[in-house]
Length: 348
Ligand SMILES: NC(=O)C1=CN([C@@H]2O[C@H](COP(=O)(O)OP(=O)(O)OC[C@H]3O[C@@H](n4cnc5c(N)ncnc54)[C@H](OP(=O)(O)O)[C@@H]3O)[C@@H](O)[C@H]2O)C=CC1
Ligand SMILES: [Mg+2]
Image (tube, rainbow, N blue to C red; front, top):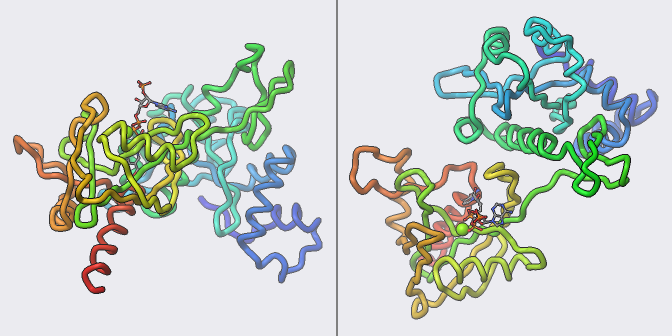
């Protein structure tokens, strides 16, 4: 089903070193992969050839095709070009759809990776032929392991971006994509459009002994998370963060410390910038804006430890126990970092 890594290396070597590659140079895997992806974005013919030797992840109306190996363990299915050709053929398509595949990356085994939305075709035939299932990303994202969740999220974000950027905002004309799908151009206005992410700040506020979590009414029952909000045009990260906390809970934060970032596929494609911040205990009185948040409250370390043990909301309880975002979410990372910090404070 999956091509051997040696055969997939050939196009990469030829492209980078014109066939006279040096093994020593080639062995710097990370740099080679990055440059390979960059070449594929610039060179349509090379990208088409990489597609013929690459791995393709199928989606149906933005739902990834997943295979369940062990109960509750899902993986995206990597298909070869000929396998997708055969699947399309069996679904009554002539295979020309394959050219619409979008480049998403390059595996550590040097397979160029692509995604393709087959939303026009009957999903039942594809599911039967691939022995998989198309699953809503909101559910799939949390069932996938390690590096596969961000890859699937990136693929879905790119597919969505292409679906909603078919026309130029200035001329109303159709835009054309390059083969990699890394940009779209309007031939009439010459405007080049690139895939976009919306910057979002997310912050775990601490008063020294407790951390602040909130929930929107749209969250699953009992789920609490760090405060988050979209950056306005012209704002710095720090300004957006101070504004969001002031708007949502009426506090003025200090000591902003950057933690990490992540691409987040919801609601569309967000670039989460995660930070820690503090307020003094004497200025920790909350004034929650209930138009934005259903609830916000301070959690002790003990309460956080309990909440981390709740795996899913206890549906029958009238007031369900609080539970926290899963490991994939940068909010989870902020909470774990805060917990560690509490321990190092105790041992100082
Ligand atoms: N990865 C993680 O750990 C976490 C991720 N998140 C993500 O952060 C995102 C932002 O948090 P949230 O509290 O909802 O944000 P906000 O507090 O900014 O509130 C969301 C509202 O902001 C308005 N808005 C402004 N700019 C945009 C934009 N570019 N795109 C969409 N809406 C915009 C919309 O209002 P209107 O509808 O009135 O136009 C929207 O309903 C969430 O979508 C969530 O998925 C949140 C918590 C944890
Ligand atoms: Mg918010």
